[in-house]
Image 1 (cartoon, rainbow, N blue to C red):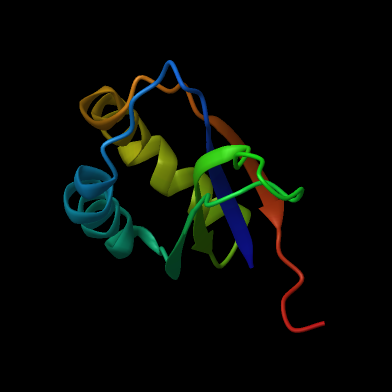
Image 2: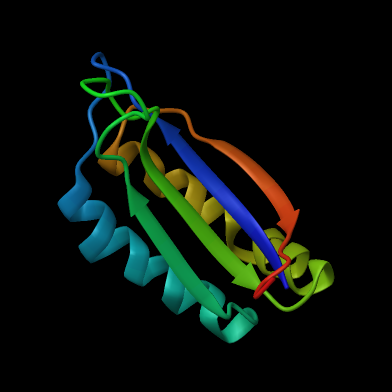
Amino acid sequence: MFKITVLYPKSAADNFDFDYYINTHTPLVKNLLGPEGLIKVEIEEGIAGAAPGTDATYTVICGLFFPDPETLEKAMDKHGMELISDIPTFTSVVPSMQVSKVYDGL
């Protein structure tokens, strides 16, 4: 399985509308990418850092899972710009993205 991870760094200067992200952006992701081979979506909301009393490094980490890199690439080629263009609607954060091979169930 392959995953594109979208990481939204936490910053006091940036805003993040989590309600919009969960209730509008995530359904958009599923509606567009589901027919293109999306297996599942995992969303993590950063609560705290590893050390007591520290802030989380990321406000949100999102994982979009696909069966193979070709399906992922085709889906993102088709709908990636539409999804990226929605980001300023819910945050001023510029996310980082990474594609990974997932070794599940080890």
